[in-house]
Length: 113
Length: 118
Image 1 (cartoon, rainbow over the protein chains, first blue to last red):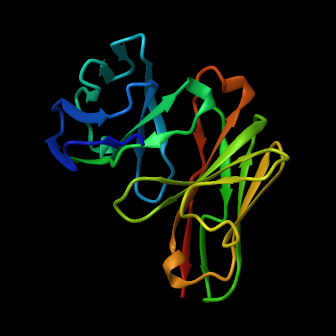
Image 2 (cartoon, helix red, strand yellow; image 1 turned 135 degrees about the horizontal axis):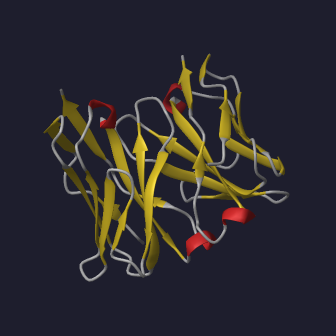
Image 3 (cartoon, one colour; image 1 turned 90 degrees about the vertical axis):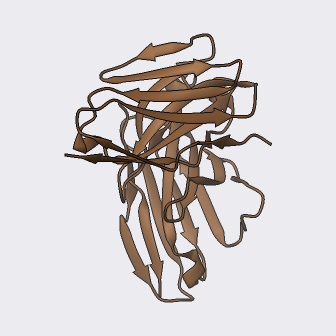
């Protein structure tokens, strides 16, 4: 079955630094990728998504990069702020809306002021 | 974005009792709802998928008689933990998908329900 994993369980950065959170996925049939942010005691919050026909997508202070060759996904957060401290999950879908979401293990991002 | 509401946010119950958690889509019709379970410092684990008007599909290892799921309307799904035991204590999260979002695959998550069984 598909597995989605993260390289770093915890990432500590200083306020103002750029953060990079990585994710590896195993199923080459995955065609839709989402990053979620989860604050303590809350449900996941959508950050940004990307389809398999793209390799980069930018949002406000966030950029998602997709490398389908090595099945790797990353989330870049520019000028990280204390409010960015949370657990970040990558998730994958196959056939877009017609399959279930598979979550990675999560990375905790700790931002020091 | 669309809003999904869960209730209650926190619930404490005695062992052996049953607890019902509600998941509502507030501004869209949710044709499919998903229920997840999350233990501390772990990822979300899909428990079951429910489509409005039909029986839920449970993931392997999830007891359907233990975790009763009802999706009777396009805006409401309920998860009932029957005869709860301390090992059922967890964070339960629902998510919903509507036909209007089918092409994006985007899911909208509730705020989660923390269950503590004494």
